[in-house]
Length: 53
Image: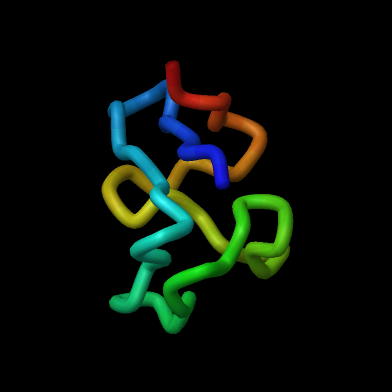
C-alpha cells in the first residue's frame, strides 16, 4: 500500500501502521480512512495529502 504525505506539515500516513491514536487500525488504506479523518499533526484534511515519493 502507498504512503501519503501531508502537504502542509510533512506527516506521513503509513497504512502498515495506521493511526492508532485516532482509532485507525494498521492495514487501513488511505482511501479507506473515515471521511472525518484529518492529519493528526496539523489537522489538514485528506485533500491536503498526496502519494509519498
